[in-house]
Length: 213
Image (cartoon, rainbow, N blue to C red):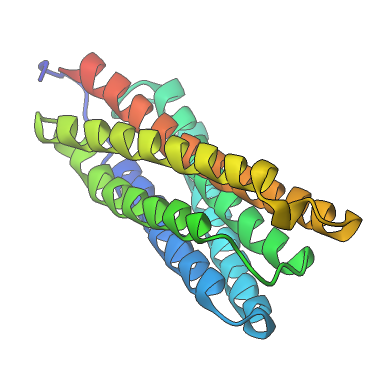
């Protein structure tokens, strides 16, 4: 790591770690939501919304700190992008849970469970990576490689789900079935966007690591 003449504000590392910690809670709640009976999903969606608000507060705290700090531990734009994309991860997971409840979807395809499992693992890895930004080393390489692998896995699950929705007679047999298909597509689209957001976080971490090495 390059030698620095200016002090580093360690507060940013704590704030980013807190922000990533909300993702773990959010992904776990989303997993509980899709596994719950339809009548119980609304309560999980409300809990997920609360975590999303907490995540927003964490993002705002990072932005305020950026505005108040003259010397940042690494590039100001990288901190901004990292915080914003962590927030995107949470927003997309909360949106997926909200859509499941608002659309009154009862039966979710099995592949949705696979999508959410990938998000849970991505959230755990991301939460583990954020504190390591304080002392960037080779160990973070494994993080972004694994996130990239998980995102590729998420892509495959997404394509398989799309094929199921558009090819299965179940979703073609009536106008109501077609509407159900489009509801499900909206949900799996948002879950795919969440996986993409986790990969974008990892890309920013890689960029920071390269700049700081």
